[in-house]
Length: 237
Image (cartoon, rainbow, N blue to C red; front, side, top):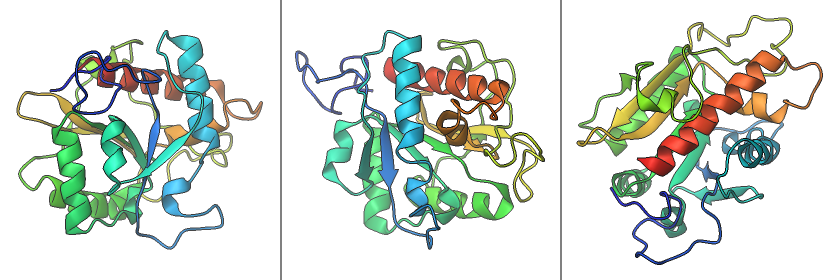
């Protein structure tokens, strides 16, 4: 694994290189899906969710995080400048061979990808098929609660289903048949977690609506804490 400024600078940067910030929260732009009234699928909750999370990260930790949102296409060569990648709504994800190869090289070089906000069997099947293009030889497995990602900063002792804002007060908290939340992952040969998959949950909505009096604090607190753990893990492994 390449470690540069706690993993925050460009992948492959040389010792002594100093990035403008230690950490950039980078959202993946991808093709696929018809979009919605809120825009393309990759841009759901963007940029408010990203901005709110970065504000929390700077307040809760000493991580030198940028204060602005950033979105980069999966096939953009500049993606390798940003080792932390956030991607959601992957029930609509479509990867061609070139993009799958680009993503595989990015992750193998030390990149870390967090998946969020996709629900139910149909979305899982599409995501699994797309990731098979990236890593046909690597299984997707449950990440156990004793894995370091769950105590990298905060101690997380259970996986909570985080609902979108319209379901947070009235329920049910799940969408489609996604009743049980999961944290799954893909590991490299050395045991590093490369891809962290939050299935049947919506951390981004909790970040976006954390300031709303109607959004329950228990969900936003969990969403911020577990995501801070993801960042600290990514920067230290």
